[in-house]
Amino acid sequence: MYPEKSLAAINTLCKDRGIYHISDEAYEYFTYGGAMHYSPGATPGAAGHTVSIYSFSKAFGMAGWRVGYMAAPSDLVPAIRKIQDTNLICAPLPIQSAATAALEVGAGYCRGFVGPMDAVRCLVVQALRDLGGSVQVSRAEGAFYAFAKLNTDLADTIILLRLIKDYGVAVIPGSTFGQTKGTCLRIAYGALLKETVEAAMDRLCTGLRTIL
Image (cartoon, rainbow, N blue to C red; front, side, top):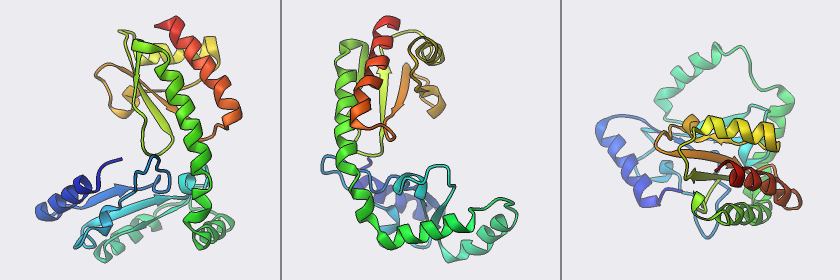
């Protein structure tokens, strides 16, 4: 979660330099601990250079349905339509209808899931912190991932393979997201229920204790 002040400053910088600010806002409804989502497109004077991208996969649990939308400057519409015309695959009509219905229901539907997910987030973070100095993790204020830094010289891909083969749990290597300084893992908990997260974290933490 970037502070509103920082996002507004970046947006202004883009305007001053004559470049577009593309803002990925897939997790706009999933914030915790009093953190509030801020869209750079809401910055005064931002409409002419800001592209805001939204995803139903995250916001409304439609993962795999490949549907979303964007808010973009009107002068970009002709170029966007050219790209759309050359895209041979689009969301099927029933999915588009479901997405329209989701927008009509609105954010209230999504917010009903934030509380239970927050409880899962706390369980995940606490389990990782219980590993002590071998793992560093912050309590992210948005989305549904934990990004853990490991106190080891082992490559993240080596740890990943061992966790899968020996402990039956999968994570994503931090290097996938450009984190090449130190060994990091991204742990997703968006699809986990509170009843199953303890078992999942037990596998992960048991593996990390052994490997590290």
